[in-house]
Length: 438
Image 1 (cartoon, one colour):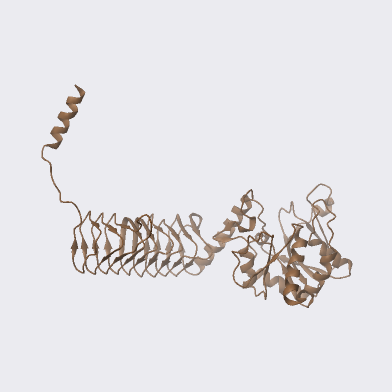
Image 2: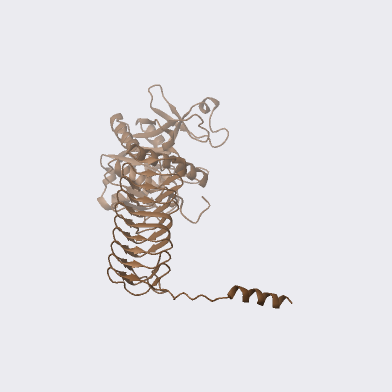
């Protein structure tokens, strides 16, 4: 990845890559989920509650990772891994495997009676993947690597079924095989696939479970692959929303994170980005805008070119218009902030209409302060509310006002210098410039 950030912490549609298989495993019904990390424990802060962290002391390969996970379970449960049961091994850099696929693997493994089941897929172009060689009964004989010339025969290179690097094991069989793994290879690492060879040599059966959708086994090792995975994941997200009744006018020109929620009959127009845990109600319209961790109730209109930052709440029927920024503010039902305004750390009452160029000056250089604007307030254009300040219901502000004191209910606030016209000013300016030139 050429990054200071660990690979599996790179973001994929609003979620760290490692959390995609973690969530899928939980959704598939996994009783326990253990994530293996390095001694730096960089993943600890992102894991959801209930997901366990095991530390792999040395970077000694996938076999070492599996050993660390089972040792973690043994330490907690006094030998859990030696009991009967199924252990699924997923990869933190294979993010697109679905919960349905994980559940299907577990079911297929339990039906097979095999000691281990490996996930495979049939690819049009299998270059770079290990090829799966089966016996006449369909069981897996071996996996042939193809990383260097001579690893596989010409006949083996014609095989299009490949190893996806995802496995199901009987817990006892895996625990018995792991101590026998050898690091006698060019990388000096313990490879989990060797456990399959050891089990086969013991007379056990190794089954294969074919994934119908090969994109689910896509691994991410660089930013090119990450971008490809992001595109595939985004397509899945768009389809989920559209099938639930959301109108995404141009999916290719729309970015929606995985945790975003959108209600029926909401219309998302092109060049909109919706990030984080934003929630949008039913019957809303979002035009060419950027939304992050905000809440929109039913019937809201946003944009174009609006920026809703974390903590922005728009109540039913509210409108935030062109080139408006809202941060940590509550915009009341049917209230309007039509255009060219910044509303930060404010509460705006229902049916209030703030004029163009409205600013809430919420920061004094040391602390943030809140502005409270009542119901049915009519704000004149270019009004600045210097917090902390409160405006009563049904009040007005004159255009160009800088409001620094509370405004009573129903009052008109005029907070601007009195206009003074200087007669003959233009003629004097011309004369001055002429005298300077001569």
